[in-house]
Amino acid sequence: MTNFGFTIKKTRSFNLSQADMRKANELLREVPSYRKCIGCGGCAATCSARQFTDFDIRKVHNTFRRGQYEKLSEELRKCMLCGKCTLVCPRGVNLRSLIINMRQLLTPSNETF
Ligand code: SF4
Ligand code: SF4
Image 1 (cartoon, helix red, strand yellow):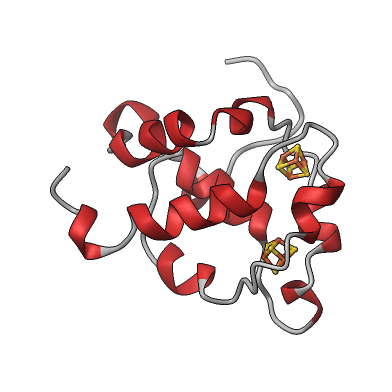
Image 2 (tube, helix red, strand yellow):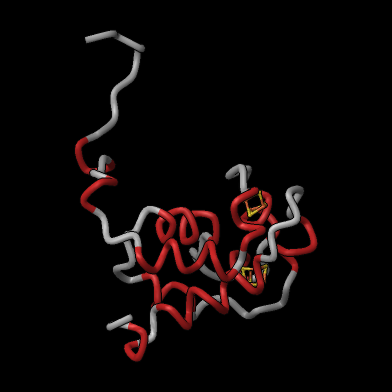
């Protein structure tokens, strides 16, 4: 095995092929601009909610994109939908719409689609 000088902790590794990607794929269909996200963190750095809580919007949308939905509904309640993240995103991702769609997809009525 090649030694890159670092390792990924077991607790941070995940198997994408075993993840349930239905909601993540639906999110990409609803908010196509999200495909342009480069994970820069500009959204999290300017987030209004982050000034008062431990909310990390980049972590939330990256986790959702990987098909890991546990506890995200709770996290998303910290967002005030102020839209600041949408204004600063260098890739033009409609984050406000992304957040609203994530909330809808995580509601129980969407569990069976
Ligand atoms: S600011 Fe835009 S490109 Fe950067 S992580 Fe957030 S959504 Fe992705
Ligand atoms: S809309 Fe939500 S995630 Fe975006 S800056 Fe405002 S509080 Fe943060």
